[in-house]
Image 1 (tube, rainbow, N blue to C red):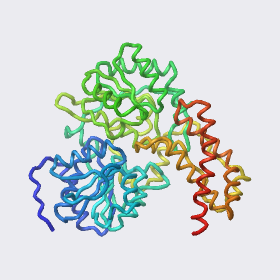
Image 2: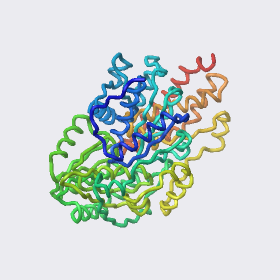
Image 3: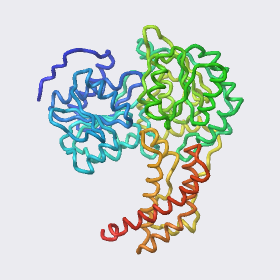
Image 4: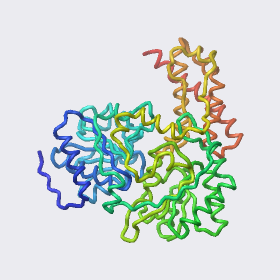
Length: 502
């Protein structure tokens, strides 16, 4: 065992306490999967980076930190450097484990590809740390690290997929200071909340449980809601550096036009914004005192601008994780910033409670089904989209397939969250359909016939995908349907010899 010679104490008292609790668990517990909860703004990154530093220093084994966004990879690597940890980012251009490094940072898909190609030996890794652990994309890698100690880190220990609860993945939960305590100890800014009750009956929930982009665009893009937003901004946020969160690109672009016409300094940002333009917009936002930034999806994680003074929730959500992430973007405390404002235009505070109210996360972790029912009760009153159903005739043609559904909107949102191209959703859908056809056919011609029988289902999936894209043309939709069927048949022909041989 090596000697730990950390040169300088740079942690808050509550962070030091959590680091010690987690490290004691690692040294004494036979259970190898631990979940750590700390609110957004509480400094989760510096805590788990110190754990990695301490672990590699004492045990001489490799540690790897997994993230789901490029920005988080870079932030984590920089934090490790600040506390004296030499580390290497495993990306598509600079792949594998290297001599002289005990600590690594990687995105899920990149590491998965490296493991599949046998360019990384997972038995060399003693500690795996998973940032934003509520994302289910990390599950696919855990089987590769059976001997490692695993620490998941999240502000909200509630799975993004209720069918895959976190207490099935982790043995125990360690909770840090709650938001109210961090505010009282002057680590986080104190919120001033303003609620505008909004009629949400026109919103619909998708198969993944949250409100659909299309119904949100329709409601929040309306003239009435645009004027209410402008009124709310004028009353509580004027002159403040402000973030406006939306559920759809069309609604965010409408906000941009409304505010620009009102003479307000504003920019729009979404997942389709190019990397260069995104850098330019964020640089403008940082240096402009009263800047307003309206966005969709991408500023909930991997974004840090402590000077944000106002958060406007121009959307409704049923996700408590998203609720905390959005508000957390404004919670950083500075010498000249002791408070920040929250303006809620989606009845979110009513649904989840005030952001600063303590949540019993141990109860949530241990009883996720009960907590999910409570959230659904709070969200009731909005009509849901009826689950997509297969005809009995079509279902009967796939007796060997247990799960025929594929939630396009959920997969699209996951792709956005993980900085993957939207087309990966279609690729995953085609792969699932190919497996279904191959699992239920004895000959290649039967598999091709099953692919043709899936045409109504293909049309439905393409329709959902085009809705997610928001601005795709009818010609593109038609082309996509034809291309989908051609690629599906091509994949079946490619895989059939392998499946048949097996």
